[in-house]
Amino acid sequence: MAVLSEAEKEARREAQRRAREAERERQEAKARAGEAVYQNKMRRYADWEDCADRLRSLVPKALDALEKGLEDGADPKQRMTVALAVLRAAGMGALDPPNKPSEYVTVSDRELTALLEGVSLPDLRGLGD
Image (tube, rainbow, N blue to C red):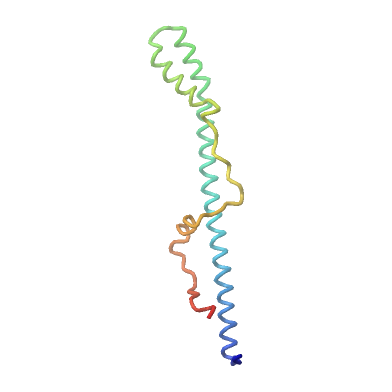
């Protein structure tokens, strides 16, 4: 068994410290990437909710137009077509929301790679030698 000199021991300790620091930075970058993915999914979910609310707010008008078209008989075809399209789109089966993301988001390797593009991490090659 070879005896290491103080300089070699210090170099090994420094390499281990750099490896721990690099791992900490990688974990922090992954946490930031996960937060960005979560915020993006929450924005998409909120946008979907807003659109669904707007569409539902059109239901009373669509019902009125459908009722008027059925009663008046004056070119109801176009009015009824639009009213029926709105009613179909507002049906509960057609408006199933996307799953609301949980606070804990799993980041795929592809998403992490895209989010970390351009982020430089220390070169760790040769540290375990």
